Length: 280
Image (cartoon, rainbow, N blue to C red; front, top):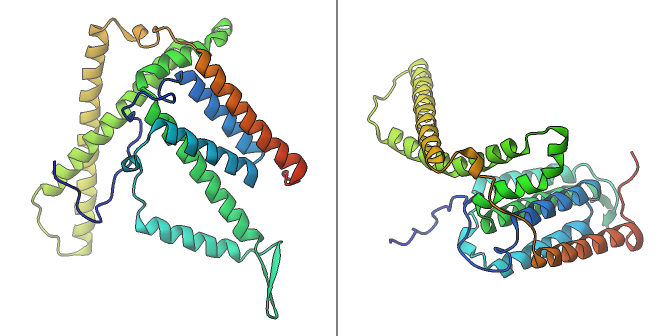
C-alpha cells in the first residue's frame, strides 16, 4: 500500500469500529447510548467550564483505553480554521466582563470567553460521538435500542421497528458515502466541453448536478434492493433486533464512574465555583 502524500487530507471515518478488544469495545452498546444521553443532558443545562473539562478528560481517558489510533482523527480543512478565527474576532467585539486594562484602553473578554466555551463544548460532543462510533459495532445498536425501549412497548410504541430502522440507517450511511464518492470521482473523469459564456456554464453546472442526483438515487435504490434481499435471506428484519442484549458487571462499573465524574463536576459548578447558568 502506498504511503499517503504529504499534505493529503484525511477523510472522516465514522460509523466504522476501530478493530480492538479493549474494555471500551466490550461495553454494552446501551451503556454507551445512555452515557451519551446523560452527558448531553448535563451539558445542556450546565454548559460550564468544569463540566466541559470533566467530560473532555473522560473522553480522552476512554479513547486511551480503547487504543484509538491518531490515524482515525480527520484532518481539519484550512478554511475551517479561518472561520473559527473570524468567529472568535467577531465574538470578542461583543465585550462584557471580565475586563482587562491595556494602558488607557479597557477590553471586555466576555464575548470571547463565551465563544471559546461554545467551541470547546462542540469539540467535546463531537469527540464523544466519534468515540462511540469507533468502539461500537453497528450490529449491537439495534438490540440495545430494543432492550432500552422495552418499557415503551406497554403503551403501543413499535420499539422493534424503530430499532431496525436505526440499525439499517447506520449500516447504509457509510456504504452510501463510499458509493457517492465513487460516483463523483467517475463524474469528474468524464470528458466535457468547456462552456464559453456564463449562461452556458450555469446550464452545464445544473445539468451536472441533475446527472449526479439521478445517479445517486439509482445507486441508493440498488443498494437498498440488495440489502433487502440479504435481510430476507437471513430471516427477515426481526432478526436484526432479536439478539440477546443487556448490561454486565463492567457496564455497572462504567455507570458508577460516569455518575461520579458528572456528579463531581456538577457539584463544583454549582457550589465552589458558583458559575451556574443565570436565570432567564
